[in-house]
Image: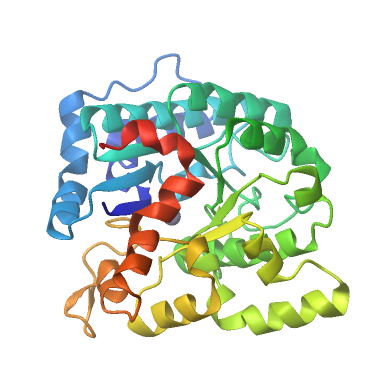
Length: 335
Ligand SMILES: [Zn+2]
């Protein structure tokens, strides 16, 4: 079985009625009625991604709402809770309409002034509906990085709930207000890097939550090429080393890198049991062709398939690790 652990239903999120609902919220109106999206419209928005999954032999994708659309710095606490529920409802319906193909990963109504108890309740509610993990924006201020490190005690209710329910948190950046830092290319990777280093700095976090698991997307940002720097600074400052937080099974990364070189670096830098296959298929760079392979950049299967990993190791990356790190996914996976 091949599991793509990192997919967003971007086309579903870009449905005109969904976008205009958010625009109305941000304009200060609070529409009473949620947009009515028919099952046919949901199915249509998934045609492209399903056909790519078929052509790439990807069996199942862990699918979440569009990351940019989380935009946790906008709106109000109440609006963002409604917005997250709306998006999660669409994800759930898309998964239910395609049994065995998708597994739901949620988004959260974060906001700089939202008490984290409220976010924790939202995790509980959607985990009860079958969600297997949640995207959590480690910034939450639109690229301003004005909040205290996300690992602080203010987020302990979220961590308590995630650990108790055995759902990993995917530390995924969102929209950036700064035009110097485009969201896909800079803000997401800054979020990866910042999240990883904040986890190294957080002395008490994994003592308080030894079973808490974080997934850092895009191969952990700079992790494959800067692990030496982070090992050095960990010794210098007496932080947890990258090897410690990876080795203890608290931090995982995915294979969302887009060349053979980057995939080789990932496999050399990070222990294999910490790497989950992911592609962001049809999300980040739809249809853009890599001349190195003659195929889409986001067909990351090519780089894994062509790597020197043994077939047993490929199986771990393609599915065994995802099943272990996302234990609640089993109910969505066909035997
Ligand atoms: Zn993503």
